[in-house]
Length: 442
Image (tube, rainbow, N blue to C red; front, side, top):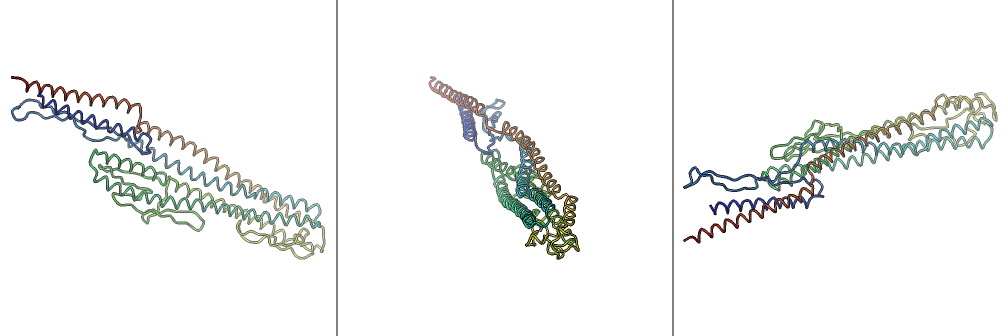
């Protein structure tokens, strides 16, 4: 009897000590990123009968059957999903803000207005050389603003592509690390603290990956994860497929996984792709606007004569916002007079036709519409981002409440397991006293 009591009490002391160790581990890692609360899983150890005790019940105490991670697969999947959506929105918003700055700060709208104002002033005195020079200077400024806008757009696109390339490299590193974790999980003991640490590492890597590209996961009984994205497998067992990025001629980007084309729907890569598509659209509209400015002015020039009576020559040359430039060198080259007018004519009818053509084309309105559309897109994406941020924060809070360390709970566990340890020690003392008493019987 005393020997049974002693072994039972010893097993209880060992179990209580293990639970105290796990509690101390939780407290120590309360602020560690990605740490999931552990608990010692206890189970009864009992055996019936034995030699000389057939039909008797032999109680054998308790044991620690494993270390349990307080993880919720659904909440973790929700955190990954919402994180992927949020990173896509953040990246796209940053790209659109840079696009907005490139168009707005270039001052294209103001330059168009100033160019038309210079033409209006010249219409009051078509022969004034100072006013002619002012018109030519306004045209040169307008062309420069288009060039600046395109350069700024190119810089914004280059930044997006650079960040996307860095994210692709990071995704490949994470994929390789996940493959290594899978291999280590296959060798880790069931319910061991090593397995719990590996599972924490696995979940942290999956969350990082979800911020780069949207992923789907499936888990094996040993905890190994299979990761897919865009319908292609990224990590399977100890193998990971390479993610690559290609750049099209228009600056947009595409992705391949193991050689197969994929179209990410979430993560920073999806956001970068969306922002670059927007940049390409804005660039096309700037090119159209620049060509319309040059075409309208040059067409009016062809219908009139310069101040020296020679046929009107183009003021602008080049194609698109990047190529537009002023080729006229003298203010006298502005064809204010109609065809057939003599040299020195102050007939401004062709200038009036040019102003009317510019008014009909409504170039300032087109530039303003472009600015409005870009600003509206930024405003709309900001609202979406804020909503996704709230959703992602809610998902994370829910996970942390379920899987995180609550110091109040751990403090209570310290007292509970300490008392269990002391009680088991007292039981061992009682067993020792009984044994001594038995030995002392005569």
